[in-house]
Length: 213
Image 1 (tube, helix red, strand yellow):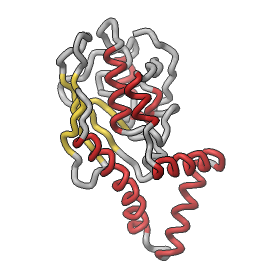
Image 2 (cartoon, one colour):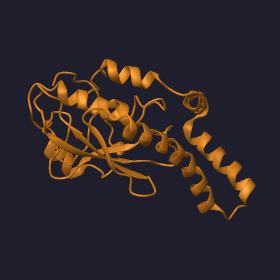
Image 3 (tube, one colour):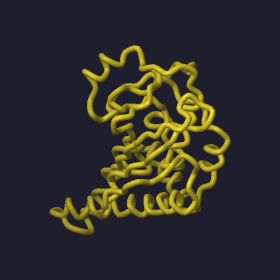
């Protein structure tokens, strides 16, 4: 399967421009990496339980996602007030657990002027946990790293995810992947994968080894 194309200069610059709050997020992420992400998440839940009582699971989930919502609100504000060409927030589905983004193929590429829809889904652990990102709608890009069910073989969505990344950075990486494509077509294992894959692309064990598209 595919490997992540190198992000362009714009992606790199935006990824490096992080706030102090995001810098603190990165420190926390590194700490959870050292101790184990799952253990760190459980510890956080236990701390909230001690404060709110043993029967407050729903309250814990709401409190946890409040932190996610705060981060996403900042990201969406940046996207709407300082839009990146070819990237547009369409719908945030009220609770922000799902966000739809429209992207448009860059000029002078195989996808020039083509419009596509991306669906982002966020867990309570975002930005420490990567979002689930898929193409949706009737126009799924024909690309060697994109399956006909909308799943995307891109390493920053799994192995190479970092809390310094954002919705905008992911969209830029996907646009960069489309722009570098030399020949439209489905992955060679598309039919088998679509029949056997989970609805959640993050449950797939991806192999990132092919830069040539």
